[in-house]
Structures are given as structure tokens and as C-alpha cells.
Image (cartoon, rainbow over all chains, first blue to last red; front, top):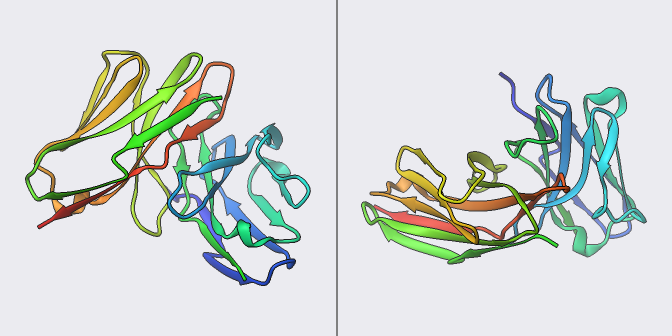
Length: 114
Length: 110
């Protein structure tokens, strides 16, 4: 069974530039999550989708971050404009449903903002 | 707001030296407590789910236990391949999101 696919794995940008990350979840998984993991910290939920609807985006900095999950399958997370403090690993995860704590994570996209 | 505190931050053990990692939590109503393993440069990998005080789960050299205020991840006779960061997370009733702790970085020395 294919796992959660993310791209790109690494991205380096200047502050105020924009960046987009892509995620393809495990086939059949209705719930998709984007987490931000800053070095030395645990993952922090940015946004959770159930199919193509948003369940929780309370910790998403909406002035600069946006995410979409068209057709309820793959998803894109965008940052515009980026700040230095956005340097982190952006993890995508999926699960069969919203009520489970068994999430399947991708390998992440490491963003460095200079 | 849910809180998860893990200790110690880092732990170095000799191969075969058993120990325990701690996860203390504050939630209004625990819906589930979850343990994950994270290798460098990888996403977290699910290990266990615990739902109620007194519950235990085992997998190879790992055993997770749960009380009303904390969970322990016991590692028995660890091997170098057990080296990783171990993350604890909780889910609260009425809140779908997982709240993660900062993890314990475990190093097993051959």
C-alpha cells in the first residue's frame, strides 16, 4: 500500500516569497491533516480536512497560510508571504476517519526561510 | 486547552538497559492517548492507542500504560534500532485535533 506522498522534500526561499507544498494521502482516507513541526517541538495542527471540507483551521495563520483539498483527494498548502519563523517541516497526514488517532504521516517538506 | 508534557527531553541508554518515558497530560475529557515514533528526517509513525486508565498495550520491546494523569512508555532491553524520538499525543472529547508533546529523544548506545 502506498504511503502519504509529499513534495517537495526541501525548499529554501527568501522571506516575503511564496511557497506551495503538495500532499497525496493514502487512497480511501477521508481525513487529511497539515501539521507544522518546528525543530525540537512536536507537530502542531494547522488544518484538518474531512473529504474536501475544513474541520479545524483554528491554528492556521490565515493572513499568510492557505490550504485546499479539491475533490477530496490531494491537497496543497501555500504560504504567502513567508516569514523567517515559518522555517519548519510541514507534515501531511491522513486517516480513515476523523475520530481515529492513528494517523499516517508523510516524510514532510522541510522549509528554510532566509 | 489540552496540554502534553513529556520527560525527559533526551535519554541515553546502554543497549539492554531498560527505562521508561513519561507523558503527563491535561485535558477536560480524555478521548484517547497516542504514542508515535519519529526517526530523523521522517514523519511520525503510529505505535499505540490507549483509551482508559489501567489500559496497557505492548509491541516488541515497548509497553505503554495509562493512568488518569499520565502515560508511560516502558522500553525493555532496548536495541540501537530503538533510537528515535517518541511523541505522545492526546485527543479531547469535543475536539477532533491531536495535541502533541515535544517528544523524548532516545539514544541506545551499542
